[in-house]
Image (cartoon, rainbow, N blue to C red; front, side, top):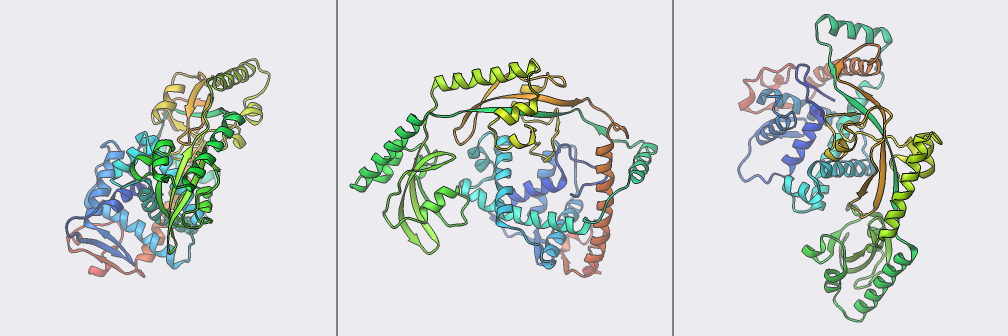
Length: 458
């Protein structure tokens, strides 16, 4: 990922910041004629894009980075050049990769803003599906750029001697980086599941509603009264979807299996149980309504789950089993169960967190803990309505310090490798500029760039 050598964003890379700003830009409904800042191959950067990207960079760096229009444009031209040649080089991106990145992005934004509704409002979209559609377009280009960079640098590695030379060079110039206080965390999660009797009650209720609708009752009215879908108040549970729409698999499969006016049997998903009715078929689109009902978890079951995790923690503190053994035996969190309960930083995709750059709820749970200490048992609930109790273990913790070659060897190795890759991409860029169509807008002819982007204007 590209970074300015003398300016670094704390906790987020320039590339990720460009992604966020790109999302804002994509949804901006331009109300005025917008000038073209540059054309790179078949990719265009608008004048308004530069302003939006600058604002996002400055916002996410908390004002620590001030970027000129020319610097911003050069970063954008680098991204567009990579995207352009990814297509030329037949780099492929699968829909599943795009969908996975979109889901991670939605989860990231939801943690940032507190809810999906706040994310939609913050970026000015009509609804969550509108946001997902634009995210898909941004993530496709983002993946093309990432894969092209990987292709360019796939054979690059660093030797221990190169790491040492890189470290000594920074040391001699007084430029050794400060390594922030960090933690590595593990978790155990126990879910409070509804009873079979409660699930049967919900299924039977949905079957009853299905029968009433088939006998002439209004699906929309039944949805408004009974559905637990938050969107029902706005649209009566009605959605227009295609097979590519980012809906859960069970919902789409059922929608495309129905005849017009047919009501489905109850189906199960991560959100609960649904019945669907197909209203219209328009080409590859389906207009479909659904009613969502979630089995309730009793207070007794919640208390039972809490007592169970309390017993697990007691056994851990008594040394009866290791944390990894406890995760394998008890934890019900799909994302961390197979990795010993290790939490992954959503910003970096690494198993470490900067202590002062954590999600507020996570920081509150572990900020006062030392290495090998346990958090208090906490209650949580997912957006799908799953209820659970969890505990966090501080696997490792380091204080803020100046980089040390021995203690921070892995990190210095990463820095040295990143520098070597950056040099390779810089060389590649200089070569590709000469064979790529580039056209700068008149407003940017005055810019002084690090690379020869103005070759078409000479």
